Image 1 (spheres, rainbow, N blue to C red):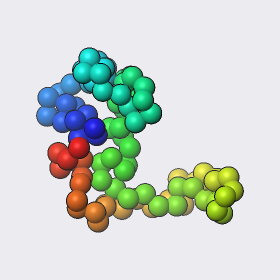
Image 2: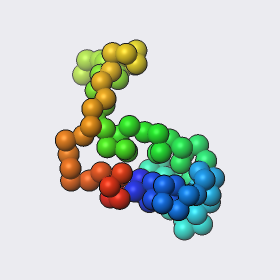
Image 3: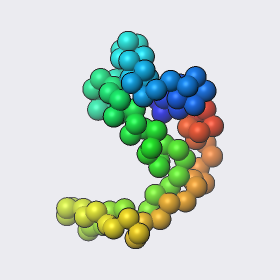
Length: 92
C-alpha cells in the first residue's frame, strides 16, 4: 500500500487529504483496518521504514518486558540492504 501512497503523492501530485479520499473511495483500509485520514497518509510518507531505510536502536527492553523509547540521537538510520521491495522504487 505504501507504494500506491508514494505514487499518488510523488508522481500525481496529490495532497494527503486527496490520497486519503481516494483510498477510502476504493474501500482500502489502513493496516489497522481503519479508514484513511490526512494524518495516516502523512505517517506513511514520513515513516523511515516505508522509504527504504532500516532503523536501529529506537527502543530498548528485555524479552517479555516493556520496551522503552530511546533518545533520537541513540538511534541509527541506514539505507536498507533488502533490495527485494523498496516503496521509493514503485514497489507496493
